Length: 305
Image (cartoon, rainbow, N blue to C red; front, side, top):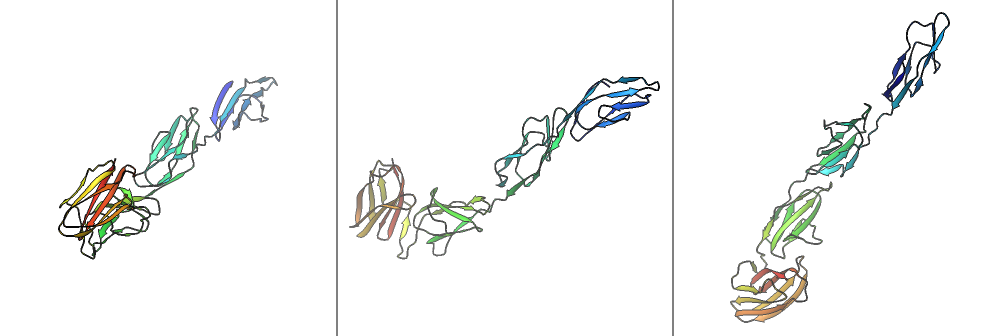
């Protein structure tokens, strides 16, 4: 019976002395031929035969390994939007892993709602099951849709309840979060929508290439007797416009958020109108130039180097 044995906490082992003796006395106080051992220690037995002769067994060393208690952790939020995921980690140092998904690695990536757990085992054969970790996937909202109103002077977006952010030519329109937007600039508009779960969707682009005004003014995107040179510019550039008749002329240079930086007003006779614009004090970047002359209105991007 000499030697050693090992088992996992919660299990047990039976130690049995040889048959044929009249009495058995174990060092734990038991007096049966066999004992059930549930705790670590060294065990031996004293036996006596019918003649009263006694003998002691060699000791047996019993080792009890603790039950494993894996703790799950996550890399990334446990609630996320469709298309994202989280990584669940069972911790290192185990001989084997078996997840509720069937995976057998230390970490798993999950992209669906559900309850996840893992069973781990040590090299000695002891095992343990983790607590359950709940993952929640939120569906992505539908794509918002931009349309133009009947008067053509505004655009609006159709989307569920949530936050709205308009952009023009790729730049956010600061503070513009209403669902309707009165058009004041030509360009390409988009809307980002964010729902209450933090999931977002982006509309298709919506191009505005003309702005009707009550007076009948139409913004022109073609050349039609209009030029800017040089563009890109280091700061000084010239605006040229062919005017059919005497007209008041208004030139406005604004940043991409629509903030007015330079405004010039004049009155010109029919023919070629030329005006040099000094933007040398402005930082490098992209600006919007609107030129209005009578019933015509041109809009261009200016690249300041």
